[in-house]
Length: 113
Length: 117
Figure 1 (tube, rainbow over the protein chains, first blue to last red):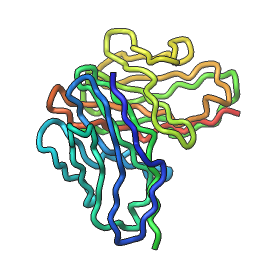
Figure 2 (cartoon, each protein chain N blue to C red):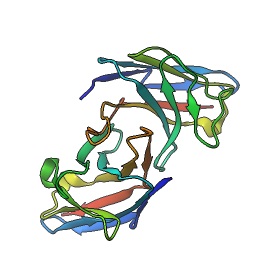
Figure 3 (tube, one colour):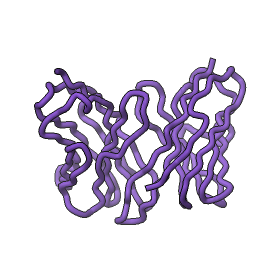
């Protein structure tokens, strides 16, 4: 069994300030973890992924996430928010043995000028 | 990563009718996944489609309502049958080329935005 919890449904930051989107997971197996971004009326885009290699994962657009097994967390961060970062973000856990993935409920990121 | 072509991109349908959504991948894949994203919600897995066998449905989804075909390793269809307004959602197909520790992540089609009136 696997599940993922995104701890904040909405996050609002000012442009130029740090971003933190929190994600906790549970999995019966060694999980693969992903962050996806969905801009309004657009498709899903992979930001970054953790697949049992380095625990600090760097993604596109300056985002990164750290896998912490002891805390079962995979929080997404960015040092400085940009207006174009405003979107919906999904944390995803997958058990690659079964192939299917479970999505978190999503976090809406708002960036204020 | 794969390139997925999904169609139609959107449709408005009458209740009681059925709509078939097509998903074409530019590479051969073993498993294809169908998701639903209801308005303002996250993605929910409907079923996993394996070539040469029946699809595996998640809890709350049944074959009579969402029949799936998987005739070959690059193509799948999802039909939304006997539609009602509650079926208004975005439907997405997805593939994952990863195996074991080499999980490359999921690639998603652009989605089909369905409105049932």
